[in-house]
Length: 255
Image 1 (cartoon, rainbow, N blue to C red):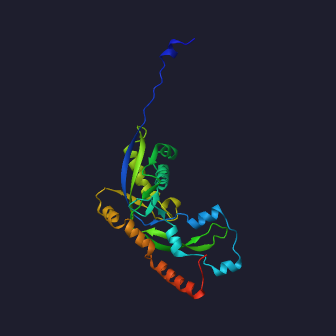
Image 2: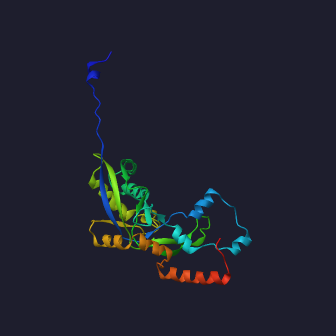
Image 3: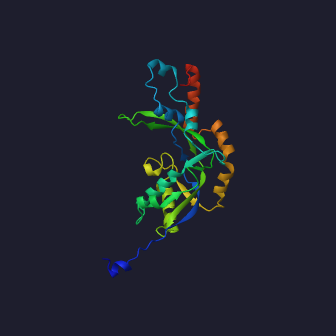
């Protein structure tokens, strides 16, 4: 039999709503892009087995220009840019930044926030080619040369939606600003502890540097830089110059 107390009990449902903030972002440090190449994806999907010694000697281990172009995330058709950043990169940075903010929880931020605008966010800025020494994941940490796209000056717009009243604009903005300094995006970012690339700061929509990057770093300038890239530093320029001479001298061919 139901008691009088049971009859008076009511379930109260708190209505959750979504709010949004649009952030205009300018890179504080160069952005090093690290997309997996189409060649590597195909090899994972359908491995062709080990090369013979003869095949290795007759083909190139690296093709810097192709590796440079393959390292970018391409924007969707109809975008104002050729380059893009994945929205998951900003979402991961936002969530991980919660570990450094008292009272914020990574899992909660992950559930209650999202990055809008599609999977790929337009990235403005003129890319350059960058060669650097990396260490392989094998037990000997074998050194190798990797060629990637680097964007010295970059900017983008990021729209964050969040759930209210659980979260508010102050918390989200604090997290996003912290993520820009302590997390970053791209390779060799602060989050990995190995570098300082990919840091950003929040600016106003009329910020002079932001507007200049948007104006000069769109699709046309990016495509021209992908077709004929400028070296990022003296080491890259010297290495690529030596590479071109040696490839011709040895009569090597593309793998």
